[in-house]
Image (cartoon, rainbow, N blue to C red):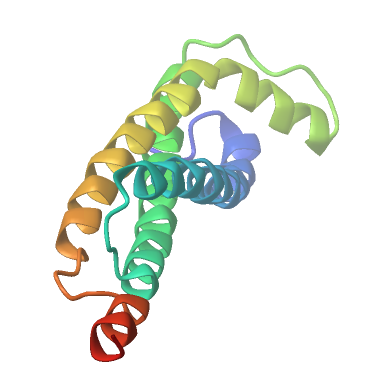
Length: 143
């Protein structure tokens, strides 16, 4: 399935997967982190930040890689219908491949981001603490 149009796709699919995995993970981590930071500030809830941060980072990594993989698989299907790549260097061939599958790449990224928001909300609920913070404990002990 990966070797769709000769040697061009054989070498460019893994490189596209690696690049998209890094890009989607970074975007998910930054945008999702800002989103949940705002949610935590507005809720004034007690979230175990270390647990949530660690689990959210792994979730962003996993879903970023999954979105890139799904995007590359869906785009490989569309590369058959794309016109043949002209004789060009590797950089131009990589750009042609990206332009043929842009809808699949971006669509899978958006679905992955929505899944990250849902998973992040579940993680936030799971890491909510019912204990008082250490500042409130000190104020209760020292009247």
